Length: 153
Image 1 (cartoon, one colour):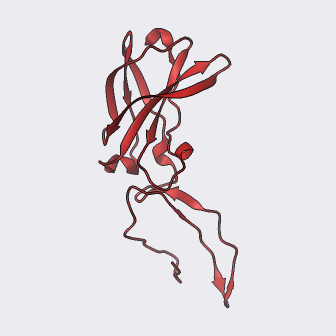
Image 2 (tube, rainbow, N blue to C red):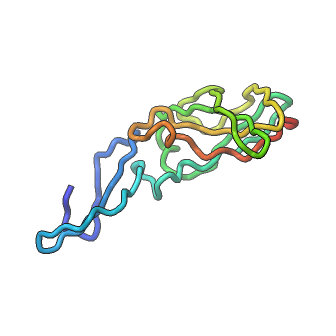
Image 3 (tube, rainbow, N blue to C red):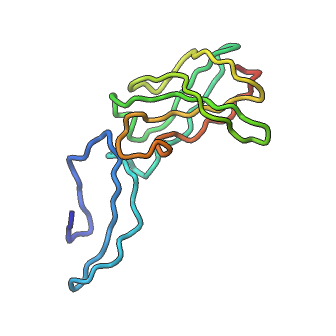
């Protein structure tokens, strides 16, 4: 879309899709190089990737945990968004093992009492927006949670 303005309101965007924008200037029919991509952004998002905040994990028993996601950014307002909950083992030297899928929910951002036997030294957790269009799978994950020591699970 071209506009000769210092601001532009774009409407009609799919709320379940990420969008990228580039800006360029035109002067005397000469165009500048496009700006770096502004995105991917979700409609209503204040800054790119703000929804990727890490989840907060609290052990609730010897093999269960509660997971919440304290963010005020855009995906919370998307009730049809499918969230996958994954965990990874923390490896010696603070590396991470492969992710394993624990479950999925739609629209909710609080999860309670999920059974898990996490091997030492502990685990970290991520959420993935599974049905968010316009993002590569690797870009659809939140940041990892703080490590949860295995003795707490």
